[in-house]
Amino acid sequence: MMETIKNFFYLEGAYLIMGVIILLITLYVTTRPFMSAQAPKKGLSIVALFLVLFIGAHYWVTTSRIAAVKNAFNAGKPVLCESRMLRKMAQSIEIRKDTAAHWRIEGDNFVSPHYTRPFHLARCIVK
Image 1 (cartoon, rainbow, N blue to C red):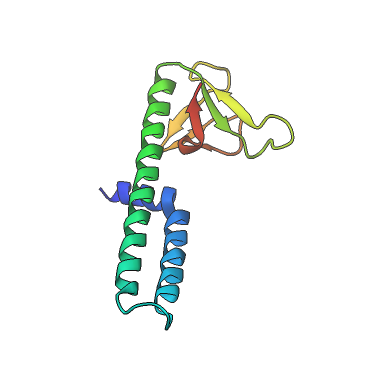
Image 2 (cartoon, rainbow, N blue to C red):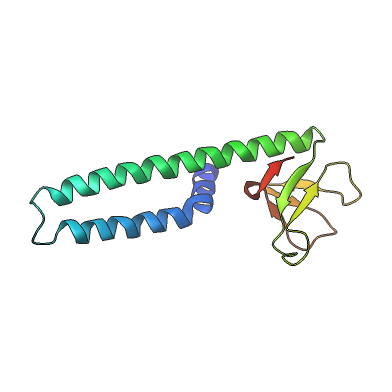
């Protein structure tokens, strides 16, 4: 359970911060003198509901993709991952379980002794 919460904050942290900023902007706008007395309650409720739905949906899609990538990798299928090291050449790298690079999964990362940086599974897709 604690690992799931940690994973949620890791994957959705930036969106949670943006959501708080959006709620603060909503609060500011709905408390202006030209707004009705019920505007802050209605505005914050509606915006918070949308944020919860969209952030929750993004987390569900991301964790589903992570599970699909893990299953494909374990089945020996190729996986494409975003390469942040090689921006000028290849923008993605193909990862397979049975290659000479000796890829393995540690937590939610692909690691290899031939690469200095790990590749997070959330930034990968099944080819």
